[in-house]
Image (cartoon, rainbow, N blue to C red; front, side, top):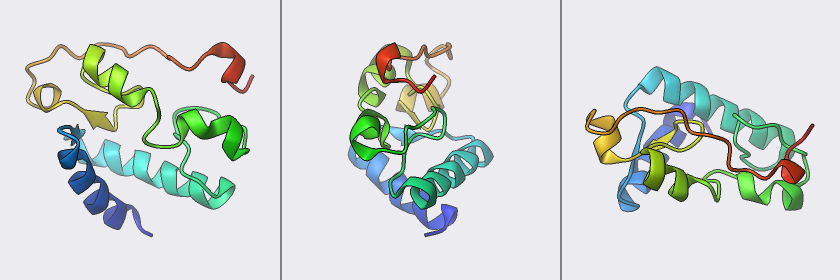
Length: 110
């Protein structure tokens, strides 16, 4: 899989969910490259913006799309890593604020 192919797949997927990929395509392509690197490294696409344990069961909450995506988008207009965003966020109708980490400390790699 290439980042370009993944971009096409996730663009369609995001639209089906009523959200979008961030309209900063170079930024998105970096995130997608990180997802694919983690897939090669661990066998699954863990969020490249977080440290993974490398054990799927321990990382299940951060396999993209992570379980925090929807609450992040609802509250901030963007997910933690900025890959997925609301339509309004992409259109500049939502203030772009820092999205805090929702993953509980006990699940994070220290």
